[in-house]
Image 1 (cartoon, rainbow, N blue to C red):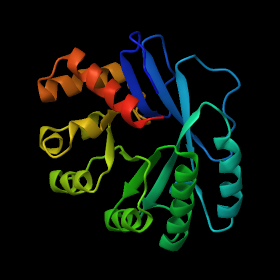
Image 2: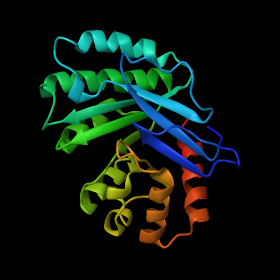
Image 3: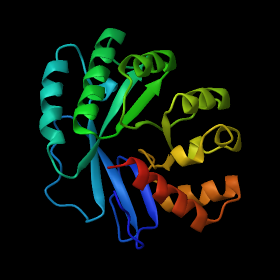
Image 4: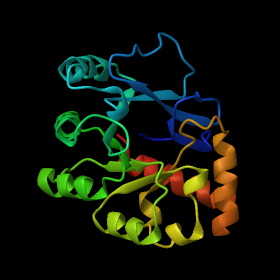
Amino acid sequence: MNLGDSIRYVDFHTHHGVGSSDTVAIVNVLSGDDVPTSFPENTLFSAGIHPWFVTGKTASMLKSELILTMAHPHVIAIGEAGFDMLRGPSEEIQTDLFSFQASLAEEMQKPLIIHCVRAWDILMRERKRLTPTVPWIIHGFRGKPLLAASLSDEGFLFSLGRSGVTAEVLKNIDMGRLLLETDDTGEDIAEVYRYFCEVTGMTLEQVTLMIKDNVNRYIG
């Protein structure tokens, strides 16, 4: 993805926003959802099988529906895929679905957006087992600094919302592997950028260029 000079912000993962003249927004839809027939020019999409919304009975159907959804030319990433040990089906079902989506990401050469709650050991195990070549991006990370350091060392990327932007965590993340998002908060992505500037001491121009460079590097 090559972002032009007119783009100032990238909202990498949102459930509410749409792109505008100065913002690219990647809007998340669920497997089987219809991508809207019309949307603002700077709006793109991700699609995945979220562990919250699947059961053993629906897993096979959702796999087939995801393949169809991913055929849309404006769907540029797979996810949210992942693990949630507080809400969702069994670990076995979640692992099967995650492996399916990770394999699809490899086949289509699209990044994988990851939801992970209390399953970091499982996620790391799957990364070692599957040895991906496409970016694996943990969205909405709000973990501890040492966990951030371990995940960064393993090659994960991070998409942070406002609540995940802390000085302690940022010290342990390679800035070249960082994206910003609004998720389901309904915030304006510009506010997340401004808060990032407050925490880091970087100028808005520096943050804008950094995020654009990261998007251009990792998002096809």
